[in-house]
Amino acid sequence: MKTRIAIALALATASGVALAQASSPTRAEVKAETKAAEKAGKLTPAGEGSPRENTPSTASTKTRAQRKAETIEARKKGELQPAGSTQKVDIATQKQPTTTDRAARKAETKAANKAGQLTPAGEGPDAPKK
Image (cartoon, rainbow, N blue to C red; front, side, top):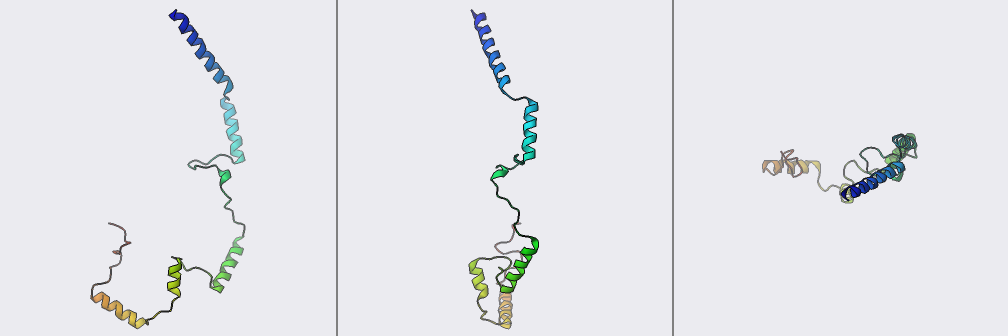
């Protein structure tokens, strides 16, 4: 009795394996599909999570000369943002006229230095930790 069950089990397992092998593609077929996908540009580059099809094109629609001409024109009109921070508050502060002259600012800085109120370079709150 045990022998019949073992034989039946072996036949069932063998037929399942045979069906699985019959329906799966061969190694050569998989390689051919991969080469075709690579040529078509449909493979996802290593390390990237999403396929390339969904990403928008990063190619520029303007030539370098056109971009440079636009930048020069914007500079002439005063439309360029200053380098560094471009927060609205910073821009508004920069556009305000100064209330003290240079000599007064220098005197304030000297007084603050004598009083020890100036923060040494590299030791402010944004300085890297040692």
